[in-house]
Image (cartoon, rainbow, N blue to C red):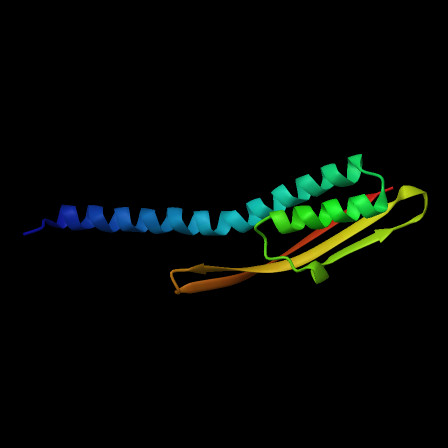
Length: 112
C-alpha cells in the first residue's frame, strides 16, 4: 500500500510542521513584548504632560494583545519631568495541550 519511503517522508513533514507551529506559538509573546516596549519608549520620550502621558501609556497597553491588567502597570512621576514605568505580566504558551510553559515578561523604562 504505502512504501516505507512515503511513510518516512510523511513523518518528517509532520515533524517539520510541528516545529514551525511551535516556533510560531513561542515567538508571538516575545514579539508582543518587544513591540510594546518600543512603542512605550517612543511615548515616554516625546510626551511630557503627566496626565496625557499616563493616558497614552494605558491606551497603548490596552491596544497591545498582551494580557496586561491595569494593576500590572506602575507609573511614577518624579521631579524635573522624570518618569519610571514598570510593567510585569505572564503568558502561557500551550502547544497542542501536550506542552505548556509560562513566560514572565517585564518592561522597565526610565526617562530622566
